[in-house]
Length: 201
Image 1 (spheres, one colour):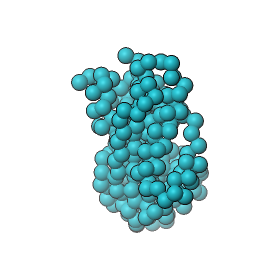
Image 2: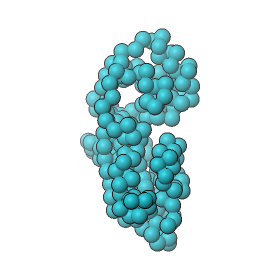
Image 3: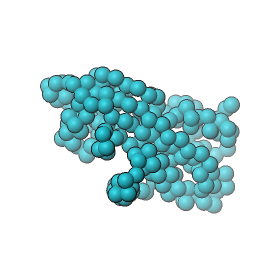
Image 4: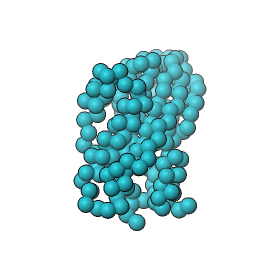
């Protein structure tokens, strides 16, 4: 069987799947995420709907390139961070990461991760999950030290943190699935892949 096509440029999602034993081919999608988010926000859409729409758009964009290949499975995924109605994106630079972490300091936010599986360009499955995370009221000095030590890693996640590493020190409480926090609801993904013979049952 051909490998699962991952419609994502995320190194974390690729690593999670590969370490779980899933053979994947990575094909980053061409989707204007900011335009999609702006459109959905203007319509008053829920953050869950945005994450799901982006996941499907990414998968569909890649699937269109492989339309002639029968039996092609494409997995799209997206993650949204919502804090009391404010949506946060991956920071562009260290200053943006600092501002974002200051805005989240001492507050609880939601990470919503969605995954969509297409077969031959048609959606056959989707899943949305959320986690709730509370940042502790860390000092300004701690934040500067964290940014210095974490370096460019803070630019790789929507929350400007990496819970699996140094970023764990930012938190007071975490409720939810660890894989969802990393950006992919891995266990439900593995379950549907087993159903379709993509991984051992």
